[in-house]
Image 1: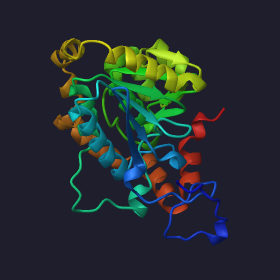
Image 2: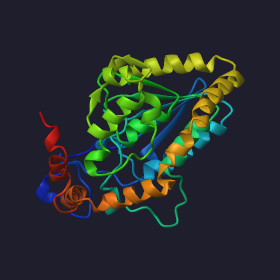
Image 3: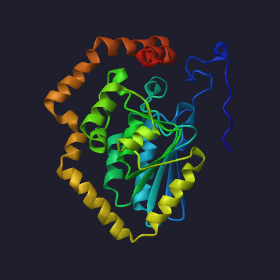
Length: 296
């Protein structure tokens, strides 16, 4: 059984180790960063870094890729449910991970783009079950799933603009339309499940206590259908978006004009100051500086 996290007083913390603002030690990367379970032809894939709201680092990316490949290849799996352990789906990219646990140089792994494209191309439907925060990469991972069921406590947002970053995966405009996409991506606002449903990011909202049951019920319905017909319908819907330039949009960094602007964003004075705060003063100071304009 996993051990319960223990609060370590600040004066007893090891500078070589990583702690949450509350004083919990963040575990080192492991195979348990993503969990895999099969029940009744449904593969349950769980992002499992709950202390830091399932933020994305190299380990989570690596093990998510392995689990998605396993689900796709397993003939006993008809449907996949992707969820987060603890109180969040995924709070986005882990900006501090590399400082404490850099990726091994010899580790072959997919990028998160590779992972979401596997979701996109997989003939089996993938359901995102979202509770708590789905921010940055989190909102985009959920967006790349075929269906998204949200708990009524879910919060969504493309907040990477507050850091000075562009979108990791450009899926939001295809889900929400022009005006809604610009508001979501330019404002950096965090908004509730009801708004996510209104603009097309979510298919269904359920009470938080019922999220897993609702995801399971939907998964069982899909699993009961002829798998070839399910694969066909997923393929033809995706093909419409591919003909509209979906995959080219995901690879927007290949455009030389966009690539140049994206690279120059690292020299932006506001962004540079915020990242310097993260490096020199830690997450709490960075978050306060980043979110100052968004506090009520």
